[in-house]
Length: 116
Image 1 (spheres, rainbow, N blue to C red):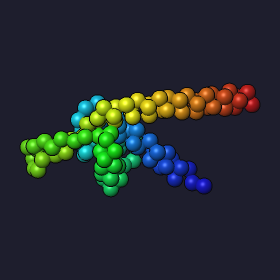
Image 2: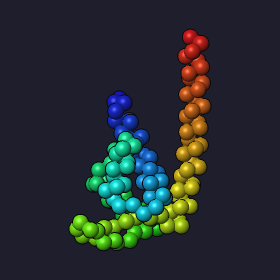
Image 3: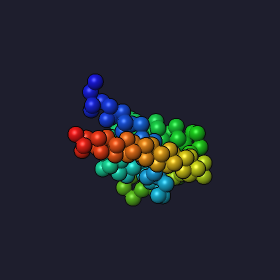
Image 4: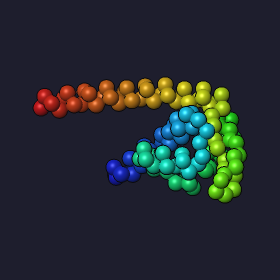
């Protein structure tokens, strides 16, 4: 078993949540979204992101607007729909529960290791 592979899978598993969190702050252009996710060490490439954005848009969680660009063709800016905001709130509750559970386990593990 390879820890690096598991780490990559964990990051992929939270990619959708991370995308929605970024977009929840306001309209976002895809390259800015990629830049922020990479800065947060959530590895993402365009070949992964575009299909995911399209899927989120098709199920009604995202909408987009075309805006003129001063340096080329119009750009597509994504925003959350009302349904997307509600979905994000649900994911946030799940995230809080999961991180609380893992932190509880970690704390017990650390306590056990400090007594050895």
